[in-house]
Amino acid sequence: MKKIPVIIDVDTGIDDAIALLLAMSAEELDIKGITTVAGNQTIEKTTRNTLDVVEYFGRSDIPVARGYSKPLVREQIIAAYAHGESGLGTAVLPKAKKQAEALDAVSFIRKVLEESEEKITLVPTGPLTNIAILLLSYPHLKEKIEKIVLMGGGAYTGNSNAVAEFNILADPEAANVVFASGVNIVMCGLDVTLKAIITPDDIEKLLALNNKAGDFAAEAFKFYLEMYRKALNVSGCAVHDAVTIVYLTHPELIKTKPGTATVDIDGKYTYAGTVVDFTPWRDRSKDNALVGVDIDRDAFAQLVIDACKKY
Ligand code: RIB
Ligand code: CA
Image (cartoon, rainbow, N blue to C red):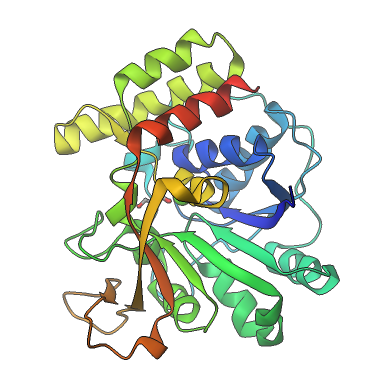
């Protein structure tokens, strides 16, 4: 089977870490590199967490390159309420020996795209700062990008306020550059990711694996579960970022709809909202995104457990 060449851009983060566990154990993917961006936590912490996850789970063969520490225009926001002070909740990993690459994230992605004979799929699961700067700095490299499978936005809801999802709100101007770039987008937004729920029963199954991935995931989910319980009074947590990986490895589990997606960077009350036009009478030649709208939750949860079983 031909592997899909990918670069994953993360703000690790609890669900970013789970997405990495899925990706690093997926035979369908050829991970050319992992790049980091500020988002859930500062760039220092998201890079630290990413290096630690990659090394702890035996994939130090994958280069990690550090990216931008601040959004393009707006003031920085981070999501310590959702991912904790470290960015991984209460989970603690040994400090990786391997350092980040000498190249910064954008230079690293540029190098991979320039040297690759095949197109690369970009998989951002945090704010889109790195991706926007890549597209603005090297527009000719768009032709080397197969598509951008991103976690971000929401056609019908926000999570950071009434309209905005965190990854978009953290850098709306960057998201606007990416959505307007003309590169094909698969938008794994809240419409699908809020259905990608891990339940306490699933966590029991992770613990029953009695291995380091199951133990790590269960510990990391603990903080997430508590946040969802306090905020939404629900028993379960949405593993947003992992949906991007499942889209690539098991697309049959995710329902998508084509639409024309734009990011509002001017609105007084709708700033950072992703407006998706699904109307039948829209100009379909302007469609830029396949938007995730549903997922087979049981199969998704089993994939997370099966991925952890492999470590
Ligand atoms: O809104 C969810 C997104 O924000 C996820 O990527 C999570 O990691 C946070 O970055
Ligand atoms: Ca993330």
